[in-house]
Amino acid sequence: MTDTVRNVQDALSTITEHWHPHRLTSVNDYDVKVVKLQGEFVWHTHPDTDELFMVVSGELTIQLRDRDVVLGPNDVFVVPKGVEHCPKADHETQVILFEPQGTVNTGDAGGEMTTQLRELN
Image (cartoon, rainbow, N blue to C red; front, top):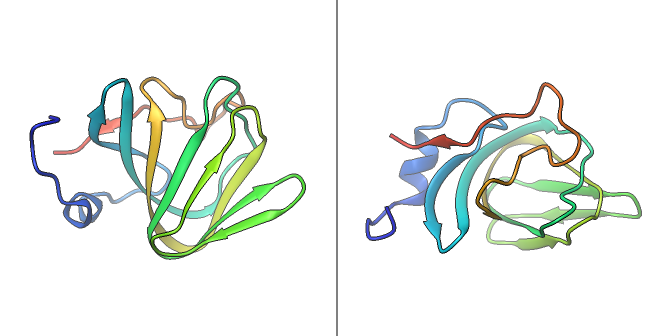
């Protein structure tokens, strides 16, 4: 998959559900994921890894315990490992995530919003 051209907008256009990341490609031991977000996720941490968010379209608020970080199109923010956070989007927002392979979307929280990484068609 790493030697294939993938268009981010085309990939996002195939996603119909919110909060279900899809692998766009892989780089070394990292997955580049695309996902559509709307509503509020769960508070969680990733104890062993940072998590990079890049907004493609829309607006994403990453709630931290001491502040909110608001991202718009083309903005990037890294949540450091071990920092509790809760993403939320009032309207549909398209996002690229960079995470080590095997990273669980809900981190240490688990629960009904935990989902397996999906492959794009």
